[in-house]
Length: 200
Image 1 (cartoon, helix red, strand yellow):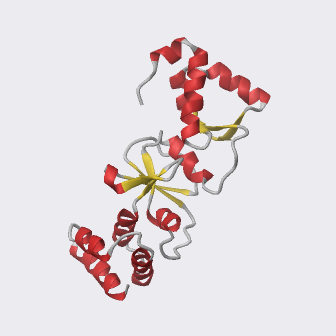
Image 2 (cartoon, helix red, strand yellow):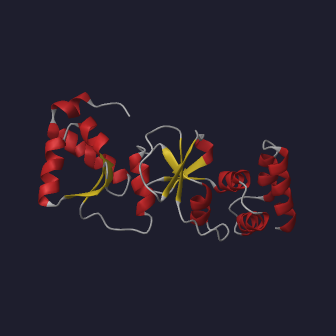
Image 3 (cartoon, helix red, strand yellow):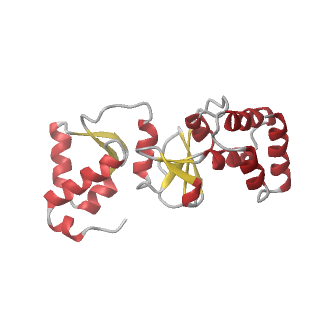
């Protein structure tokens, strides 16, 4: 994200810019964004008066933002400046595909520093716009990309069968769409998806 020279010259404008950034990610923002917008004083004051709360190393949040069930995804999206997407097992759970019950948050990111968190699995890769969709405060891989990712990740065949069956049954993606997309995958992965489609 490009720096805003006007924000650097005007701390109040920088504070407003930071609030806008935080508003995209359920109130979360990073110390990097604070430095970029040039409003360190306002954030320091906010930490003192309670209008800003520390959420972890390098992560803060505007106080008073309503808590939601998907806040953890929004927080990690803020960490990566919105240039990451919830993916794999976590995306399957969001889309209602299968019963994978992920113990970790799975994020795909093309750029950015890895945060230190035992709950986070970061997969370094670039995703095209057609591979992601907005979930409000964060991006998530599309149902089709999620199905393909899980097949490539090597989840068990029974689990993959269930993911594919759910994707087709609840109209997250069509059988033909999965079959067509699988042709670009390695032959063993494509075969696993074809088996899953025959059982869907």
